[in-house]
Image (tube, rainbow, N blue to C red; front, side, top):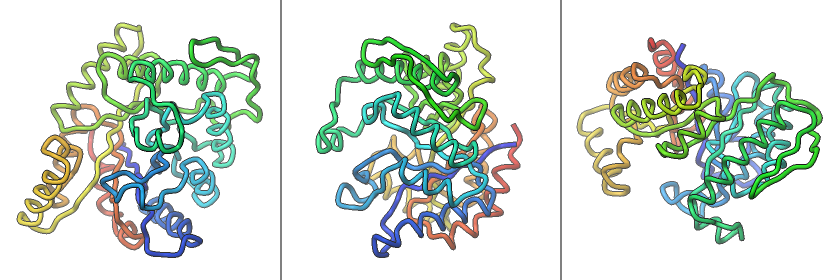
Length: 315
């Protein structure tokens, strides 16, 4: 069965700050009620420009996930994705293990090389060059995998190390999944093949088909069965009621972000969106992570038939 996830990216609800989490919890509950398999939050400290920028509110990812773990029942919980520059990898493994315990076995570690330089500079995090961030990512996933899988681990890397580190209590899951976000063909997808249980890639049908082919090549190179790596895709969804509304929405996004960015959105009638997702399912996407940037709990509660249609898409 095709899986459906939901990302919760926006916290501008027009309510007092002490009621903000209640709205987030209501969104998560509504998503579970309509059959969503996973819930995701962004690992950012400043809101992204497309959602209003740094002057808009945003909650810290893992504090939020821990609270959602206590308010939800079935959905997997993760960040899409953790910036490797923001936390010591051993601390990150401890945080995710704690989330797994609180949620009774529903944690996922989503992780990537980080990119939002503005918040790095503002928060005082170092923002090294891409190669250095990728090197840190490779070490981080090795440390996290080791700490998820063993009581005592040691690791000596160029950027990170552990010395007989304990990780108790143990995760509830036999294997906490690690998802690596990004579609870089030479390094990111190679790391996915080497270490990850899932990847998250964006784009249209031709782009994703190509990326999956690259990933399979890396899996062959490292002697891994590509079926062991789940393919997920994140996209913002705009359901429209007419051709004119679809055209206007596309033009607005194109004007704001550029033509290439439009491919990261699913825009159109339900039938048009489902047809697009069916083609993506055929090329190998196994989980569609949807983002409805400004949806209310009531609007999410009406998504049951739409989610059921996605989940019924054949492989």
